[in-house]
Image (cartoon, rainbow, N blue to C red; front, top):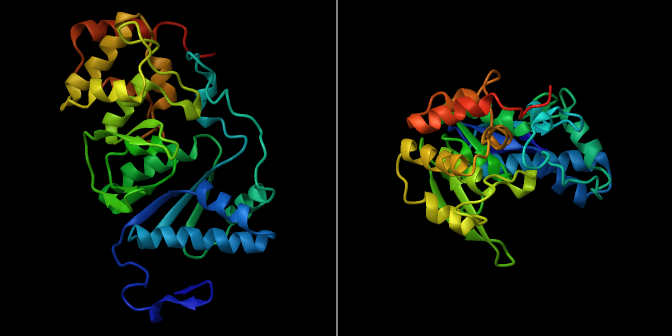
Length: 297
């Protein structure tokens, strides 16, 4: 295979295209930003975009890749219609971006521009949703790679960027406390346990509040970890979180709808909730909550 003018068949086993048969499921915004910030022409940016994706394929030991981008006018699976504590992504502004970013994104999406992998531009669901759907479809044959922590909730293989390793499938998940470069604490994790952690602490990147109060106090990453880390099964986990919502009579559905990554085109968080082993109290509470006004007509 020729990649940027180099025949990968001549590179030897350490540098050739992987024969693992796995597909890298990658968020295209990372490579697009890297390309746009370091080049002066779209043509050069497109090559840099290609190089970045191929590099990530190599690091994750994947044979091919599916790259996903969110269109600027995407409806984002109806998340803008949710009446949450805060408006979805309401804090985001049209701030300064690399001048060639939009052009490089569009050029990468053009049919035939990339020979080694597919690039998708999502207009109805977010790129994150499309990536999650493919993760569920491929199972062990897919590896998600994204700077966006929302994709951590996949139960299938996930490329942990900081550790530089592919973490294996984990149907339940785990949590751990990390730090930003400035020393601020943040909660990270894997699989569905991370979704429930976000239900508690929210997601500042998407302007999702999460739980308003826990025992009368705000609950941040460290306290969310203390609450949820000891829990080792899904029944205790989901009921612990919804118990906290029920205690303050906060409807969990808007926050859950905004945080949940779709597993299939017809999926939603209410479908997921209906799969869970609720206590009688929480079953009744959720049935009442779904009838409240929480979604714009």
